[in-house]
Amino acid sequence: MRVLACVNQKGGVGKTTVCANLAYALSKQDYKVLVLDIDPQGHLGQSFGFFNNNRPGIDALLKDDASLEAVTISLSDTLSFIPAGPTLQKLESMPKGKGRGLLLKKAIHQPVNDYDFIVMDCPPSSGFLVVNALAAANELVVPVTADYFGMSGLSMLMSTVQNFERVLGRYKRKWFVVSRLQKRKLSEDVLKKLAHYFDDDLVPIHIAERAVLAESPSYGKPVMAYAPTSSSSREFASLAQHIIQRGEKIDDKQGSTSRESLGA
Ligand SMILES: Nc1ncnc2c1ncn2[C@@H]1O[C@H](COP(=O)(O)OP(=O)(O)OP(=O)(O)O)[C@@H](O)[C@H]1O
Ligand SMILES: [Mg+2]
Image (cartoon, rainbow, N blue to C red; front, side):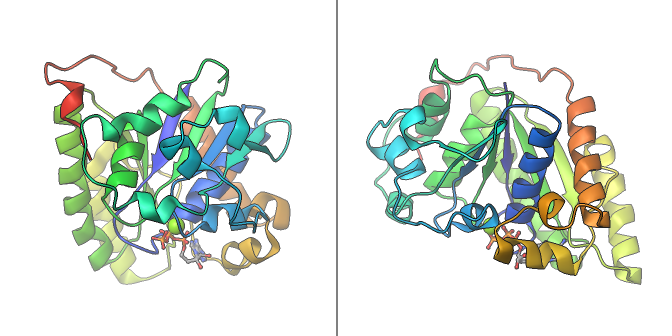
């Protein structure tokens, strides 16, 4: 099972858009996919036409030890979804405690689980919820905008991620995805810099800024369902294909540092 977290502390870079459309594209290639809304804003659910904020989800999984099955909603034969739940925001400020950063990881590895992919949408923060998502994921999908603030925010994210890798003793495969790309001279310059810094980790498929991607959530549909022949649909199909094909075995070696130190 591959566990991917869409993460970036910077807000509005396209995490939810990439997460929803990537998960949908993977499920369209007949992989069994579970998509999780780790963000109390609940935008991921809305992208799939799920507007009920009162149904328990990730909050119940983390707080009440709910079973994965009890909170999972089936969207199609190959795609399932767990909403954020009404009390997820409160969890972000729960007191620190030993091992609390590993709650989500424990929850998604329940024995009933036979998914090929779990894809998580993270909030634009670095508290308890993102700590749990980072610990649970073995791969990170990092949407990044090709502008100055997009670049400068990455160094903060990278130092958080490197701390995690050190504590867990485990490298996480990273997929930097240029999102919301517009045709500008600045974008070209930033793309060159990203390619220089991230080399193979920079995905060669870019997600352009397009009206269909902004519109499709208001119809509760991923872009491949809302506008199947659009270039955005093709971009997400190619992104999924790239992540499938290039997903070499993740180096899962254990580190010497205790996992217990991962308190949120
Ligand atoms: N490629 C794109 N083309 C057009 N609009 C986009 C694109 N990507 C995202 N958007 C729009 O930009 C806004 C922010 O995108 P999104 O919600 O995916 O970002 P986010 O990183 O998840 O934000 P947050 O940090 O608040 O969770 C949304 O209105 C979304 O529909
Ligand atoms: Mg979001």
